Length: 141
Ligand code: FAD
Image 1 (cartoon, rainbow, N blue to C red):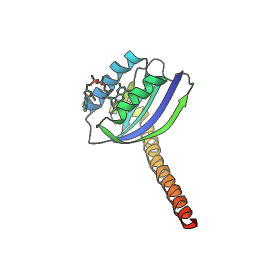
Image 2 (tube, rainbow, N blue to C red):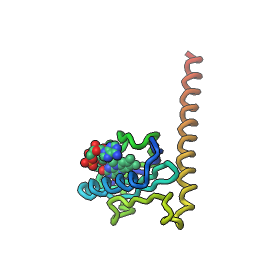
Image 3 (cartoon, protein in one colour):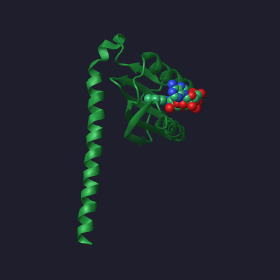
């Protein structure tokens, strides 16, 4: 069974283009050995990643990614089971959207920023829903 996750995060500290490339190279090495594929984009201090493959491998690698000190504020945007691969040929295509060589992809920078910001907004709204319910239910006790 194949699983696919998508998440956004932000750099913990500024990362050089070389450091981003190193994350991509490390990912490609590991993913190829675990039958994982996907896409990793960086833009304006944010990451956007799609990781797909056997469910156990996705969960194992995502666990390592969550614990990686190079980024923070991870927000899992989607997690799907029984999927077909969207990126079967890419063990982890890594694209630094801040590099001039990707000028035709520049419009994606605003979309990644919007996904990150909307995600934060949704988290805040969910927090407000849960706190309000707790507060109201306590009043009724
Ligand atoms: P190795 O690859 O052998 O690395 C050795 C050790 O060095 C690991 O503990 C590693 O965490 C650490 N390390 C290496 N460079 C640095 C550094 N600059 N800063 C801190 N620690 C470092 N890994 C994948 O396998 N697949 C992915 O798709 C993937 N995507 C990632 C996406 C993002 C945005 C980030 C930040 C990391 C990603 N990683 C990915 C890396 C992952 O978080 C782990 O670092 C990696 O999987 C560890 O692999 P390993 O145990 O085989 O160690």
